[in-house]
Every structure is written in structure tokens, then in C-alpha cells.
Image (cartoon, rainbow, N blue to C red):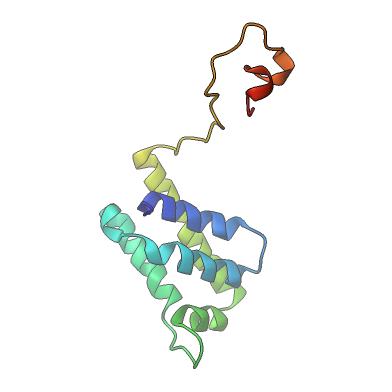
Length: 130
């Protein structure tokens, strides 16, 4: 189960990939924003999240599509850009309150450094995965 922070970050990353803006917006909503537990957010961000939700589900779907697909289909590229910007703006207030997410440091060596291990091969000679 992902936290609200992880879902907001995932939505922002979905919007940053290379694809048409409408496709990225629908993906960000379906795979991340729809999964955010609004109770985990500060009150001000809850209203912003609801506004994004409403902006992405306002159209009535045709047969074989959902409200998100129908809404995004009817949006202009400029409207899609504006909603995408609203989604990305959710992240900085959350980050300011909770601090940056720690960066992944890579695998830690599970072996003790060997005094005889060659430096170019990592800390544990042949068995070290690094």
C-alpha cells in the first residue's frame, strides 16, 4: 500500500514522461491520484486534490470508456496542461511539510571489507555485487 506522498510523486513522474499530455494526465490520475487517501493530506491540499479529481472526471463517458477518458478526450491541450500543472503543484506543499524523500543509495554490501580485496573490484573482491 502506497502513501499519499508516494502517489503524488508517482503522479508527477507520470506527467514527466514522454507521451502526449492527455495520455500522461489520464495515466497519472488512474494509476496514482485516484489512489490517494485524501485523509493523509493537509486540508488545503485536500481541496486541491478534489479540484483535480473533478477536473478529470466531469464528462459523461461514452460506451466503452470511463469518465477520465471522456474528460481528457474533450479537453484542449491547453486545458490538459493546466490540470497537469495543478497536479504537479500538489507536490511542493507536501514536500515542504514532510521534507524530501530519501534518495536510494544502492545496495549495501553484506560482506565485511577485505583487506586484500583489490580496490577496483569493490570492497569484497569477487563476491561483492557492487
